[in-house]
Amino acid sequence: MAKKKKTVEQELAEYKKDIVSQIKEWEDINENGCNDPCWQDGMNMNLVRHHVIYDKVKIAEICEENNLPLPSEYFLPTPPSVENSYMANLKQTSRVERIRQFGGKITTDRAKFNKQQLSFV
Image 1 (cartoon, one colour):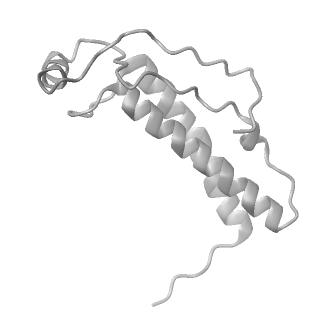
Image 2 (cartoon, helix red, strand yellow):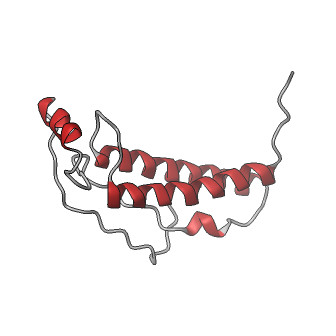
């Protein structure tokens, strides 16, 4: 059975929702870390950041193709790039040790995120 094609409004709604969700995830990882057994928190934060950028690019394309105004979510600040070696905390000792065993560097310098700054991407 063929999938029903999403409307422009449905596509935009998904990307807008994803931007908000991804920004919250970035902030949560920055504050609390994550549980990825093989990669530092910074690697995961940068991946989440790239998802936000991708969503904004897709929104811009859809809006341009359909002569629609850019939604407010498009202008939410994009989380900054961080050091890949960033770890929010060192309490997950087995995870930290595993990363160090495989030559991973670790820094705990917390990233600053200015949520008041408007952003285009």
